[in-house]
Image: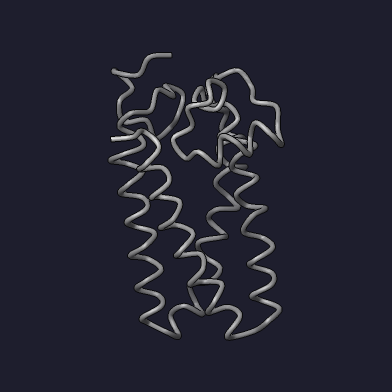
Length: 152
C-alpha cells in the first residue's frame, strides 16, 4: 500500500468530523460556527509547529499525512528530529483538547451528529494507529508503537 494512503484517509475522516461540528455550531449560532471555523486551523497549525516540525518524515519529505509535511516545510523551518519536551507536548495537545471538547455540548443536541462525529474521529484515530504509526520512524514520538523497530 502507498505509505501516504492511510495518512490521507485519516485526514479525510477527521475533516469530515470537523465539518459535522462546524455544521452544528453554525446551526446553533453564526458566531460559534465562525469561532470554531477560525480556531480549528489555528489549533492544527499549533500542532504542526510544536510537534510535526520535529518529525523526521517532514525533514525527509515522507510525511504520512502529506499536507501536514508540506505546510510545515512552507510555513515553519523544520527542526532537527529530537525528543519532545513536556512543554512542546502540552502546547501541541492543549488546543486540540479544546478543539475536541468545545462542540460536544451542541453535538449532543443532535445525537446523530454526535455519533457521526465520534465514529469518524475514532476511525481516523484507528487508521493513524494501524496505518500511519505502523510505518513511522519517529522514535521521539510519544505515541510511537514501534520504538524498538524505529530507525532514526
